[in-house]
Image (cartoon, rainbow, N blue to C red):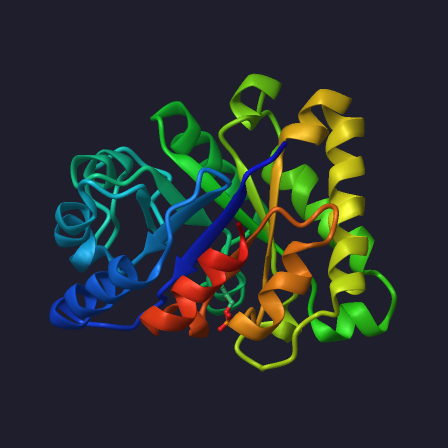
Length: 251
Ligand code: 13P
C-alpha cells in the first residue's frame, strides 16, 4: 500500500513571521496518521526555523529548488549541503514555474535530480502539460518525454527516493482543477511508463502526486483515484486550516 504524500509548496509567500504563524496553525489543525506523509516547502530563508518548529512532529521539510552544482561562484544559488544542513529531506525540482519563467530545461532538471539523489535529498519531480498541449491532444507524449528526460540515468534503486508530481500547467493557480478522471488517466500513463522503463515493482511503489488547484473540497475525490498518491498544493497550503484539511483527507 502506497502512503498518501501531501506536500505544500509555499512558492514566494510568507516572510519569517508569516512562516512561524502558518506552521503553528498547521500543527494545531492536522491529524497525524500513519497513512499520510505531510511535507512543507517554505522559501529558503524560513527553512531553518521551520525545521526547529517541526521537531517532534511527523511533518517533513522540503525546499523549492536547488542548484545542480556543489558550491562555488554561483551567485544567488543554494546547494544540496546547505539544504541538508538546515534539515531538508525533500526538494521540489522542475516545477513548471521554474521551467517556464526561469527557462529550466529537462537536461538541467535531470542534473538536479541526480545531484539530489547522490547527496541524499529526495526530489519531488514536477511534470505537466500546457493548455495548448492538452488541447492538441499531446498530453501523454509531453508528460512521458518529461519523465524519460528527467529520470535519464536514474537507477531503479535511486528511483525509490523520487516522488513524481503531475501538475497540468493550466490547472496551477487558476482554480481549474483537472477532473479526477483526467488526472487519473495521466497518472496511469506515468505509472505504466515507469513499469516499462524500470519494472512492475518500481511502478507499483512510485508515489505520483497531483497538483493544480487542489483544495479541501476536491482533495478527497482526487486522492480516491487509483493512481493518485498525494497532492502538491500551492494556494490552499497558505492557510493552515485548508492545508490541514487536505492532509486529513489523505487518511
Ligand atoms: P495551486 O494549488 O495554487 O494551483 O498550485 C499548484 C502548484 O503549483 C504546486 O506546486
